[in-house]
Every structure is written in structure tokens, then in C-alpha cells.
Image 1 (cartoon, rainbow, N blue to C red):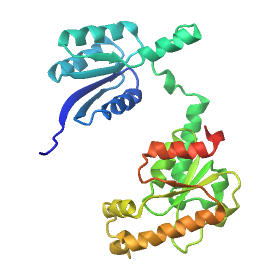
Image 2 (tube, rainbow, N blue to C red):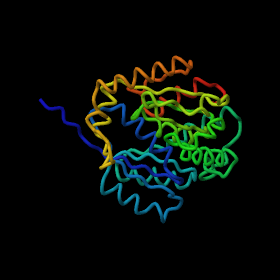
Image 3 (cartoon, one colour):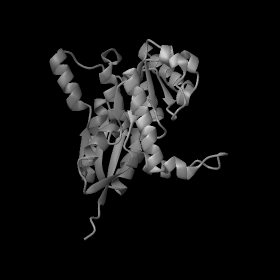
Image 4 (cartoon, one colour):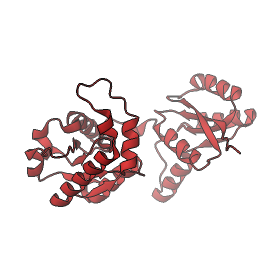
Length: 273
């Protein structure tokens, strides 16, 4: 018998960007394989006027309500209205704030969007993101020694998304494709600052991803060669040998999410934490 999944409405109300809620909602939903969430995200909800159409939407499509609202009066109103509608509501931040207040012995400032303040850390992340974009796919090879991390790997080993994820943590990451029998830039071999990490995956995984990649009509492109498992196996063999020769660590990304790959990279170099 076919295993059919049900769906439920997940309403996410935030007085800021909603990033915290989206992560929390998806992390919780992932623990329930039998039901999939239909997400409704309502960012920048900071007063009752903005909240009213949100509550109307919840009434029309009842489901679980998660919210991060630091204004206690507005939070109480959300709970009151959700109770009247007959749906569960959870203030995701409240248990965390309560724990912090108890341990620190002081009340929180309850400032909306405090995590998005234009601090030095914020500008560091912007600088790292610009660096990652400038140094994507082997670009600007002359400045690799300015990187915190350089990711190398054959095509379709998640180098670019991992670089961007690291940049969002303020880590300057460059990435370089490994092409069999094409030497790496001399500037990389001479670099002393960055952690150089090789990314690999199984032959089957890379072939599958390459099969699904749209490459248009690039002149001279041979799709059959690009997706052939024997050729991919040779590419991986070359990449492994290259990293072994230079004693660069390898990370297999086959069953890792981008977040897990980034965490493994940070763990290799404690000063990146």
C-alpha cells in the first residue's frame, strides 16, 4: 500500500525577519515523517493592525502557530486569539529568554530585531560574503592567502553553497574546482593562512546531481562524459591523491547537509569558531 503523507498548516509569526522561526519550525517538522508542513510566514509583525490579517489567515487555515514576538502585550494577544480560534500557539523565544533571565539574574531588553543590529560582526559577514562571491569557482586566484578557508573539489561537490554558508558566519571562503591533470594555482600552493579542505562524494551521488544539472548549450560540452561514472571515479581518485599529497583534509559530503559540511570544516580549525 502506498505510504501517503498528510499536510498541515504551519503559521510562523515574527516581529523580525522570521529566520529563527523558519529554522525552528523546519527542525521540529522534520521529526514527523507522516505529515508535511505548508508554511505561512509573516515577518515584521509589530502591532495589532499588522497582526489582524494574519489572524484571519490562521482562522481560514487552522494549524500550528509558532511566533517570536518580544512585545509581551502582543504575544499575549496572539495566545488569546489562537485559543479562541482553537489552534495551538507557541512563543518560541519565551522559554529561552526565561532560562537566560534566571541564569543571568536580569531581565531581557526585549528589543525587536536585536540580532540584526549593524555591529562589527554584521559587517564582517557582509565582507565575507563579498569575498566568497569574488572567489567563487577559481576566481581571483592571486588573493587566496586572504581567505580563512579554501574549498577544493570536483564539479558538484557543493563548494559554492558551502562557501556562502561559511560567509554567513563571517568566514572568508574561496572555492576552486579540481579538474584532472590541470594544476592548481601556484598562489594556493604558496598560501599559508587558509585552511584548505577537499570535498568529495560518492560516484553515484555526483553522477546523479550532474544528470539533473542544466548546462544549456555550452560550446564543447560533452554531457555523456560529464555524467559517466567511470570518468567521475577517475576524477575522485585524482582529487583524493591530490589532497593526500598535500596533506589536506577530506570531507565526504554525500550524506551531509550544507550546514553539517560547514560545521565539519569549522571543527577542523578551532580558531574559525
